[in-house]
Length: 160
Image (cartoon, rainbow, N blue to C red; front, side, top):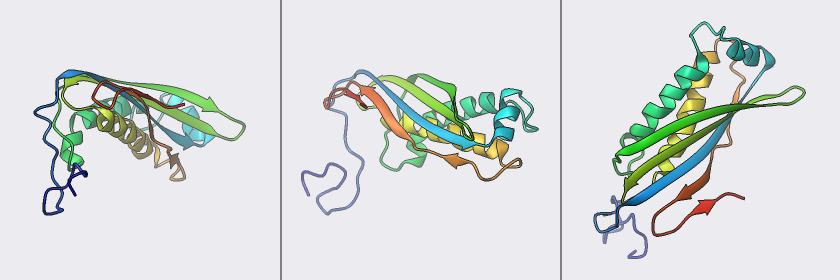
């Protein structure tokens, strides 16, 4: 079990000790999406959803979620985030309206921010669903994935 970093000598889960790792600049970007129908697309883009400005609320929810990742993912460390940003774009097909959500997170610390970026993108998509579910519950969330990350001993990663 010694090679598995999240298990102790008894084979039980533990939080990894990162105190000896150097503090470096770290970034991560993650993407999620939510597929909606035409009515929801039009209501979001015209800001006519009854609960309010969907993208503004979802953006704040994603930022808040990134700061609380350590509270909901058991083995995550609490991190002092130095920057969080969420951006949106639409991918429109013949019958499909896909809101693409990109979350970018930064810190200067001794562990990475991949989970914070993934959490931000996920909660952002969930918030869009919550705000629009009265119009249609058939929305589809995902896929959600890491786009890129920098810093740390494992080096940089960029999805092809």
